[in-house]
Length: 124
Ligand SMILES: Nc1ncnc2c1ncn2[C@@H]1O[C@H](COP(=O)(O)OP(=O)(O)OP(=O)(O)O)[C@@H](O)[C@H]1O
Ligand SMILES: [Mg+2]
Image (cartoon, rainbow, N blue to C red):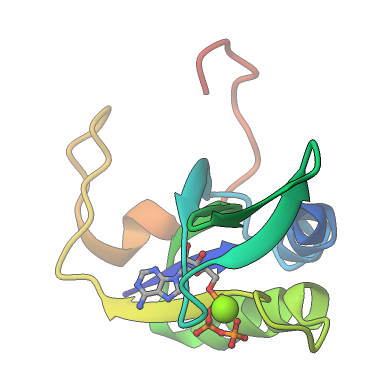
């Protein structure tokens, strides 16, 4: 199993989400984060004053998939997140030792397989 952890611009997410849903990969988490890459900060003017913004808002995507699906996820992120401008973001691919579905205690890759929803509950 691999965890794809990506830091992207917010506007890239909708296309990535749709592509992953179409590929049968609905399970992921997103978080609003702030960060910096190698530029360390950019200069912006605010109310006439120049100031250096050190941390820029980004969206973090975390998605754990079978090894065979890792390229599907990274390809979707690259397709929608790359503009060619600095600040497009980063993707990290991380080995995952195990996964456990809390509801059932199942372990391993079976936890990752999507299936027809048997429930449309609250709290998913
Ligand atoms: N090594 C890292 N560890 C954790 N987060 C990172 C790392 N590098 C980048 N990020 C996150 O990704 C965001 C975007 O990074 P960014 O695209 O600016 O990287 P970069 O290396 O500066 O590339 P570029 O030159 O294309 O801007 C950062 O704001 C930060 O949230
Ligand atoms: Mg940068």
